[in-house]
Image (cartoon, rainbow, N blue to C red; front, top):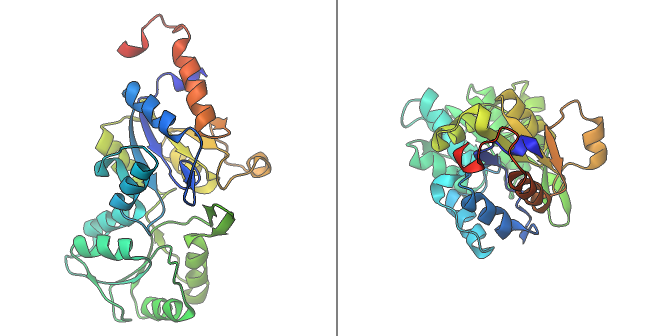
Length: 278
């Protein structure tokens, strides 16, 4: 596929693209070997705020793939970065989310406390979500705290099917408070800007690979990037057919993408320029 030839930088989603639950996708190691062999730089940018960079580095190592921490960008880190741009050091933050999000905000210099008198309420995927946590967050927002969401994903792909995502939690709080959250993760532009800055990338050589139309693909289009959808996660063929958001390329999974890319690079370059010089 000719559109793959000029790509030198990738922003890659993980859940539903590289694995489902704890099961790696077929062809995972071959995909990363292909990227390293062709010197295609990447950032693994996930809207999942419940896990840290090192969690992902270690998971990929168990799957036989080596990545560096700076090649991983979870939305907990992007949210901490965003707050550093808009909030004073030491601001008080109520977190609905997992330890990775709490740690990222603490390391960024914020006071993470379980109280209603705070400056910000930050909401990420929380596997121990309770009505009491939601009520505390709602009261903090009613009291004037700014409402921040790590990501708006409506669903999360597990090994045995889909689960409600953080977008469902945000919708609950928005309905209760009448306040819309400021969303940091995809499809908002911040994560794409951070990822491209890390790679030294430009839009002309960059693509987004994801499994969700309203986050990965829409976000990539908003950022002016090529978009590649894989059908191994949250999006079914029928969902794709009915969606107003359409990717530039579609593959069944990363194994099919790798095969098509290998074929594209092996074909004669129509511009007569060796791929290594492009």
